[in-house]
Length: 254
Image (cartoon, rainbow, N blue to C red):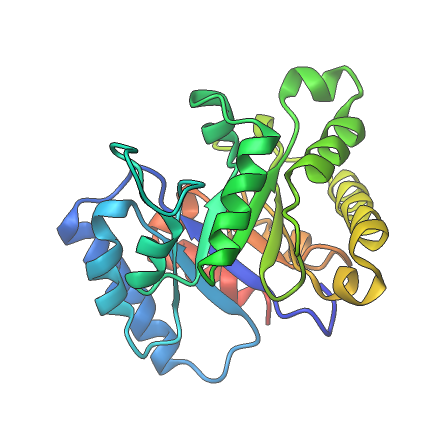
């Protein structure tokens, strides 16, 4: 972590949580942040669409930030089952995840789709968390740096900067598997992303823009990843559904 980039610990609840459990988790996190001393990190939760409004109420005035897991690229229209970025902002969201590997794989989203969604998010006043990462086959073929660099170049929205964009590197082969890259591998890729941002955004924005690590981050490995120079937080999946684990990851920033 850099001293001048405030860590962001983001919880992606994915398709998990009915009303009772979701509200209990949100209320628990809200209490912990309210009761704690001033914290040197931002804490974000991204529940499923069904829970955003009520989770937002549970988090009110706690300091825990609210986000969503996806948005449509259009502002409105005949898009059954989709949700616009403006609708999310209307519910109090500050962030939205775009381009998660599960969206790219399960829904066939392309880099162009991700870029369009990120631009829609920014137009609605949201910060876009743009996800990039390689599959196991691409990793085994030695294509990690090529794939992640290409995804970044094609997914980065116009007008991107530290105030409206976060990059999340998520090695697809590590998500939910318990496998993780070595610390050296993680730093190498994050440094590559930072270097690409320097070329595209200039030194000021690139130095300030946060890059998260996502891929089986847990309480027992969070501190090591968060200590890397170019890792500025985590995009946390399964561990974000357990208050003790998610809070322990966040506290690793101390």
